[in-house]
Length: 175
Image (cartoon, rainbow, N blue to C red; front, side, top):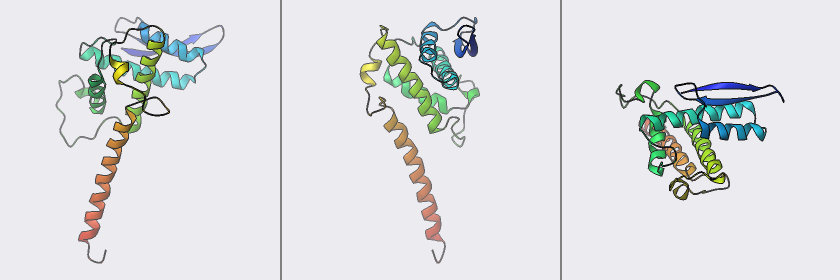
């Protein structure tokens, strides 16, 4: 899969799409990205969402999952998959525990936001989505239940770093 720039001649506007291995647009993603372009989202936003949804569909393909039948647990596995370095995502390369995560919390949050908005759009337009949207209920004003998990994860990492600094200071005489 890959992301392709699209230029519509009349009226002149730029958009992006996701193509499968045969160079054919992925229809549900195409509908959503067209919608974003039609409501005049920035081409950079559409491009970022195209890359995020490409990652989602590559992940689904690697697990032989139907995008309309995914579960909330699959979204959690997607987060773990995003943290892996790209060569390790297909399972042919082992990753040592000391390797840093590939995607930052901010990037993961943006990708989850794109996936969430994609599914909400699909549901509004009659897509049958199984139980995913019932279990992925809005938690805040931005309409996403995954944010607390990611924020908690970031806070835990920050607290661990702060504790480490505190322990080092305590071991230095005069501190």
